[in-house]
Image 1 (cartoon, rainbow, N blue to C red):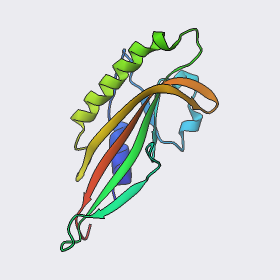
Image 2 (cartoon, helix red, strand yellow; image 1 turned 120 degrees about the horizontal axis):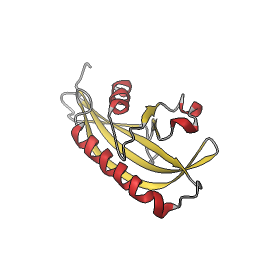
Image 3 (cartoon, rainbow, N blue to C red; image 1 turned 60 degrees about the vertical axis):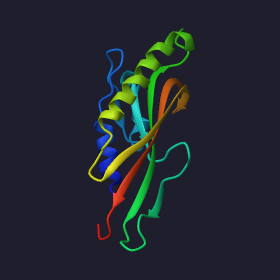
Length: 150
């Protein structure tokens, strides 16, 4: 399984909006993110569905498998309540969402044998480490094709 390869490729995907390019952090180090590092991306090992992997046979004869990964890439754009409301921050969040979709299209074949199948984007407040942020949550479905013996 290529989880780490997929994660590394997703983290390396550059997303720039409004002159800002958020750095991607794995969830185990994201707790150390300071306000100076915002905007920041946190890549979570499961999507909004709560599913980690799903394995299905592609062919009963060959034994090939298809592994479906669901990941969330959450961009903490700006702390909420800094005298800016949703109407003020929405243009920046929409610009980021559009930039993310463009980057995902360019990285569709994210790793060898792995394809981004779908991206669902939600603009919403997100609480992380006790701080509320205006955020863009990108839930991805990535399919890994695993031929028998690999």
